[in-house]
Length: 255
Length: 227
Image 1 (cartoon, rainbow over the protein chains, first blue to last red):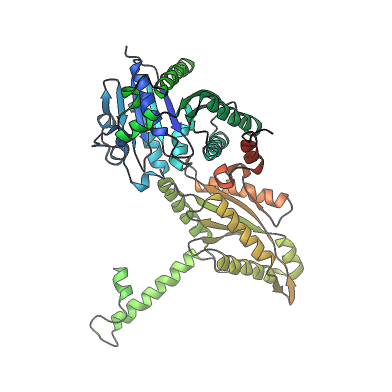
Image 2: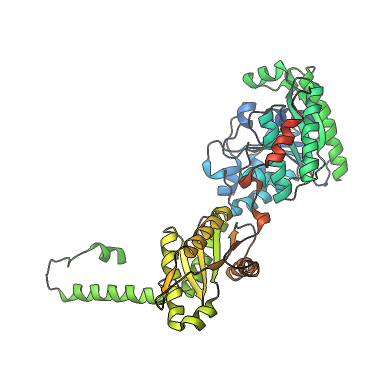
């Protein structure tokens, strides 16, 4: 059912690296696609891209080529399924880490064009709070913050939320706690952050879900396959299908 | 062509008294002198208004292309009228020259210190973010306050007020608007008692100042096991 409705754009970001952001993005995209949606994954880690590594793709054209030589953005999309595309970034191109304003506005129109062919565009950003991370977060409809229960991840997520709310006027954050020992630990981590954000930033953070630390996930990342495909019954996969359902509710909220 | 001549210290055909080469050298010196006249404020030795406007335009364009901020410091000598009235206009001029000397000493080589007009000065700081520009202004303010100048045989302590801003290239801004925007903070510095540096405090982002101690404590307090 081709719709002309604007796509839901989501930015998946974490402040701290190593919390499983990319793996979460890709598996979530599969879960959404499984439910029939047209989904685009954008590798927003423009300096050190790794969506393609995780998926074992051989990349011919990247976002960089689209920006540099005006390559057709739609032709740069690699289709994993008929309704699941990936727009790869280029690894190790340092100038893309700091996007200049000129590049930013072009990237914005390129992403808008491509996204219009999908129901959801999931943008996986780099770690940290660099200019490109802030840019992707300001560009999208919804900000998904991925964190682990580890204190360093908690602090960095909070710092990122603070910057985005204060300097970029973002107010709606959805939290996903990854690598949790239990749902309880995930919820507790959320509550901590939620309280502090309420007190100091006057923000209401939304809880999107907890993804448990699951052996099948680690195995999948090393084996370069997707746990949601290989082990759809695992706890992590079930958590991701739940996340996908909640994200579909976000779409209904937006439209 | 210019570079070629610059490299040559003597006549290419080795004629010691070559009239053509002497003329070229004379013209080159004259050219340099005239270039200085069009760019430099003769009283203070700083860049003049014309150079200021031209360079700022260029730096703002660079910011739009590269995303590297351009910092701007506007300053105004405090109580200039009183100096003129008390010590005479010549001393007023000496005071301005004194500022020129200090600005010249305290800024980096790539910064452009300019006389905007009267007792107002503008410094362009290429590739400089707001926090660094604020530090630079603070350095100038401190240096001026702590180096008294001899006027009419008396040591006089001069102070100045400063407004600081930075252009990040996010929106299209003209040179005039950028200056006006910065001037607003200079006026604020004057209004708040002079001899101070003012800027948009909302623009200092979390990335620069990090989290407060209270926030850190709150983030970890709830995670400690209860006793």
